[in-house]
Length: 369
Image (cartoon, rainbow, N blue to C red):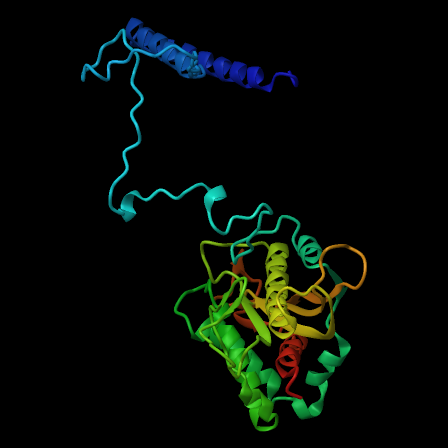
């Protein structure tokens, strides 16, 4: 039975149908119902057959022999061959009936294929595949010198824990009328950025940054910015999980997407500084960071580009610091759940973890302190 799974499935379907037909014969209508069951049996058996596939006949061209067609007679003749009409081409350009030329005839055609990674690409092996594509090595946790920025008393926000909890409550409870909000990562993200921006009075370099949404990153660096702009390169990339309802990635693939876009931004900056056609070990490494969240879990990644030579697996590699699945709270319920008239979880915010916002603030202060 294991050698022929198709036969086994077909036999099981036939036995179950015969059982159904015997039950129908036991009804009070007698012969009429027996005839309906017989017709149904034949219909099901005939429907279970695989459709016949017509084999296309190959046209054989015999040299020196002309095929007689009914093209000159201007009407169909069954004993003559079907003529092959030349393809009609318009003498004007019609965009509705445009046919692109073959890829080999395109002016930018190359023998080596190019694979595109976009926002909806799901890497099968996740972070491991992204590390291989970018020739990088992963380190668990964030750099200690980066975390020390937010732990300094001079960089603390007044009433930090209370204000962060109020930002979470605003995103989960106050900014929606739904009993259980689905999308709140966008509101929480902007609330946390607003709290971090309150340190601008003590750190003026924060005011020299700007927030850009939905910019385009391609083979060349394209942002709406032209020439020598004051903000030529990205400092921190923010990814909101679930922002696009048509694209849902698992956590491993979500982190892989963050690494790929970090590498793309760092590579674009390297091409601007050192040239697009130079493959070498960089004299000065390029560092860029990213934060990803779904409203409760945060992903922190720091990427350091050390080399643009990706030809082999040996030699100097790029560096990735990864802090994954950091919870900012445990439970946030609009209405408390009851099981057998017993309260299981109280309504409101529970299990706030301040160390997650400390990491968020550390990445924000990086480069300004």
